[in-house]
Length: 315
Image 1: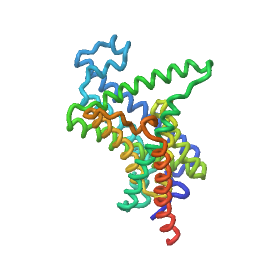
Image 2: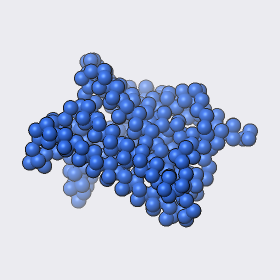
Image 3: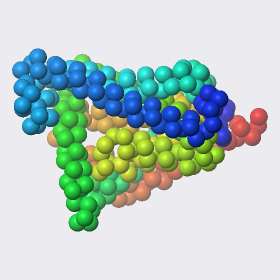
Image 4: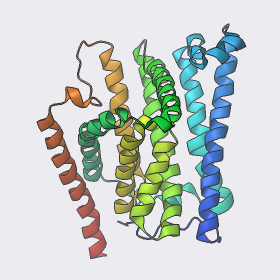
């Protein structure tokens, strides 16, 4: 088993700094190109279904009133494919001149480590609920009121879009939603943010902790939800350490899919339940349970890390 101590060389023979700038440029370009193509497809489908350009300009979210859930999910999947799958693949093949598989330094994924990752992610969701509430309650000084208003409006628009994506009419739509919202982003975003970006930062800074947290910050910021930035960044940090400790890109993918998948499953189950429990809402989670979850999370991560440290020492 192999830890990633120095970062995988993805420079393609270039110096580390220009290589990082190219990686970051690819990431930003992929984000906007993905948004563009997905937006065009969604816009065309909405217009075909009777939406007017005037209405869409006045209220962009009204577009979803003219889209079936399947059509909206197809648009979201297109964005995910372009941004998080094609972007890292293109960089790796054209500039790094390596296959995506090189990002997985440890080929074997064992069931025990996978179980630790799933349980640890589940525990962390209880812990992260406190940060979700704290981040949502942040207020800005008067001179930043314009930014706060913009950020709140963006948050509301994205929350409305998320509700549209997770209101399933049947089990078939739920399965499609699970693939689009949980599985596909988990694979693509981990290859992009942990595999390519974090390795590039680790080669540049020669410090795995800086690489993990800078890439986690970018991971959180790229979602364009300031009032969800901190909990996403913390999740990104967890994914980053799982990758560095193990050298196996599939463990952060499993963790990412677990986090998103539980959210999708809960959204679907709430449609048939009157329960007020929400794993993302700290007010619905007793403080002793949050503390217990934090302790279990730490223990599980220490056990996971030690499995790879011990194997490294034996080599």
